Length: 140
Image (cartoon, rainbow, N blue to C red; front, side, top):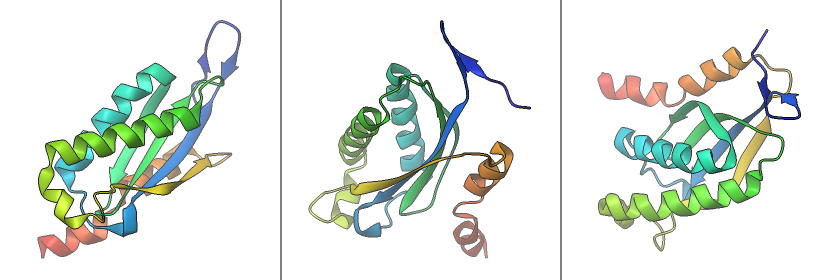
Protein backbone atom coordinates (compact mmCIF):
# COMPACT_ATOMS: atom_id res chain seq x y z
CA UNK A 1 0.00 0.00 0.00
CA UNK A 2 1.30 3.46 -0.78
CA UNK A 3 1.20 6.54 1.38
CA UNK A 4 -1.64 8.99 0.78
CA UNK A 5 -1.16 12.75 0.69
CA UNK A 6 -3.53 15.11 2.45
CA UNK A 7 -4.44 18.72 2.98
CA UNK A 8 -7.04 20.35 5.23
CA UNK A 9 -10.06 18.78 3.54
CA UNK A 10 -9.01 15.72 1.60
CA UNK A 11 -6.84 12.66 1.27
CA UNK A 12 -5.44 11.83 -2.16
CA UNK A 13 -2.74 10.22 -4.26
CA UNK A 14 -2.28 11.88 -7.64
CA UNK A 15 0.80 10.86 -9.59
CA UNK A 16 1.77 11.74 -13.14
CA UNK A 17 4.40 10.69 -15.65
CA UNK A 18 5.61 13.67 -17.69
CA UNK A 19 7.75 13.42 -20.82
CA UNK A 20 9.30 16.61 -22.17
CA UNK A 21 11.05 16.48 -25.53
CA UNK A 22 13.71 18.82 -26.91
CA UNK A 23 12.55 20.65 -30.05
CA UNK A 24 13.23 18.46 -33.12
CA UNK A 25 14.73 15.84 -30.79
CA UNK A 26 18.06 17.69 -30.70
CA UNK A 27 20.50 15.72 -28.56
CA UNK A 28 21.57 18.38 -26.06
CA UNK A 29 20.78 16.98 -22.61
CA UNK A 30 23.73 15.62 -20.67
CA UNK A 31 23.90 14.81 -16.96
CA UNK A 32 24.76 18.39 -15.93
CA UNK A 33 21.94 19.93 -17.98
CA UNK A 34 19.52 17.26 -16.76
CA UNK A 35 20.49 18.01 -13.18
CA UNK A 36 19.82 21.70 -13.72
CA UNK A 37 16.45 20.97 -15.38
CA UNK A 38 15.50 18.85 -12.37
CA UNK A 39 16.54 21.62 -9.92
CA UNK A 40 14.43 24.16 -11.79
CA UNK A 41 11.42 21.83 -11.97
CA UNK A 42 11.57 21.00 -8.27
CA UNK A 43 12.05 24.64 -7.27
CA UNK A 44 9.08 25.84 -9.33
CA UNK A 45 7.07 22.80 -8.25
CA UNK A 46 7.03 24.00 -4.64
CA UNK A 47 4.74 26.87 -5.65
CA UNK A 48 2.33 24.41 -7.29
CA UNK A 49 2.39 21.64 -4.63
CA UNK A 50 4.30 19.36 -7.00
CA UNK A 51 6.88 16.89 -5.72
CA UNK A 52 9.28 15.02 -7.99
CA UNK A 53 9.38 11.32 -7.21
CA UNK A 54 11.70 10.21 -10.01
CA UNK A 55 13.60 11.96 -12.78
CA UNK A 56 15.75 10.70 -15.63
CA UNK A 57 16.73 11.71 -19.11
CA UNK A 58 18.05 10.71 -22.47
CA UNK A 59 19.89 13.15 -24.75
CA UNK A 60 16.67 14.46 -26.30
CA UNK A 61 13.98 14.08 -23.62
CA UNK A 62 13.24 13.83 -19.91
CA UNK A 63 10.96 11.60 -17.87
CA UNK A 64 9.52 12.91 -14.61
CA UNK A 65 7.31 11.08 -12.15
CA UNK A 66 5.64 13.60 -9.83
CA UNK A 67 2.83 13.90 -7.34
CA UNK A 68 0.44 16.84 -7.13
CA UNK A 69 -2.45 18.14 -5.05
CA UNK A 70 -6.01 18.08 -6.45
CA UNK A 71 -6.06 21.88 -6.79
CA UNK A 72 -2.72 22.05 -8.65
CA UNK A 73 -2.95 23.86 -11.96
CA UNK A 74 -0.71 21.47 -13.84
CA UNK A 75 -0.84 23.32 -17.16
CA UNK A 76 0.33 26.53 -15.45
CA UNK A 77 3.12 24.63 -13.74
CA UNK A 78 4.22 23.05 -17.02
CA UNK A 79 4.30 26.42 -18.77
CA UNK A 80 6.32 27.98 -15.94
CA UNK A 81 8.69 24.99 -15.78
CA UNK A 82 9.27 24.79 -19.53
CA UNK A 83 9.77 28.56 -19.87
CA UNK A 84 12.15 28.90 -16.93
CA UNK A 85 14.17 25.79 -17.71
CA UNK A 86 14.53 26.78 -21.38
CA UNK A 87 15.66 30.29 -20.52
CA UNK A 88 18.03 29.29 -17.72
CA UNK A 89 19.58 26.28 -19.45
CA UNK A 90 20.37 28.33 -22.57
CA UNK A 91 21.84 31.09 -20.39
CA UNK A 92 23.90 28.76 -18.18
CA UNK A 93 24.99 26.36 -20.97
CA UNK A 94 25.37 28.67 -24.00
CA UNK A 95 27.18 25.99 -26.01
CA UNK A 96 23.88 24.17 -26.61
CA UNK A 97 22.40 27.09 -28.55
CA UNK A 98 24.40 25.98 -31.61
CA UNK A 99 22.58 22.64 -31.60
CA UNK A 100 19.08 24.09 -31.24
CA UNK A 101 16.78 25.28 -33.99
CA UNK A 102 16.21 29.03 -33.63
CA UNK A 103 17.23 28.58 -29.99
CA UNK A 104 13.99 26.76 -29.10
CA UNK A 105 14.71 24.30 -26.30
CA UNK A 106 11.52 22.36 -25.61
CA UNK A 107 9.02 21.09 -28.12
CA UNK A 108 5.71 22.90 -27.73
CA UNK A 109 3.97 19.62 -26.97
CA UNK A 110 4.47 17.23 -24.07
CA UNK A 111 3.17 13.89 -22.86
CA UNK A 112 1.45 13.79 -19.48
CA UNK A 113 0.06 10.49 -18.24
CA UNK A 114 -1.70 9.61 -15.03
CA UNK A 115 -0.12 6.59 -13.45
CA UNK A 116 -3.57 5.06 -12.97
CA UNK A 117 -3.30 1.61 -11.44
CA UNK A 118 0.29 0.91 -12.45
CA UNK A 119 2.49 0.18 -9.47
CA UNK A 120 4.74 3.18 -8.87
CA UNK A 121 7.79 0.93 -8.55
CA UNK A 122 7.26 -0.31 -12.12
CA UNK A 123 7.06 3.25 -13.43
CA UNK A 124 10.09 4.28 -11.36
CA UNK A 125 12.14 1.39 -12.79
CA UNK A 126 11.10 2.38 -16.33
CA UNK A 127 12.18 5.98 -15.75
CA UNK A 128 15.43 4.89 -14.08
CA UNK A 129 16.27 2.78 -17.16
CA UNK A 130 15.98 5.71 -19.60
CA UNK A 131 19.23 6.36 -21.43
CA UNK A 132 20.86 3.13 -20.17
CA UNK A 133 21.47 1.73 -23.65
CA UNK A 134 23.33 4.87 -24.68
CA UNK A 135 25.37 4.96 -21.47
CA UNK A 136 26.33 1.29 -21.98
CA UNK A 137 27.48 2.01 -25.54
CA UNK A 138 29.65 4.90 -24.29
CA UNK A 139 31.28 2.63 -21.68
CA UNK A 140 32.42 0.12 -24.35
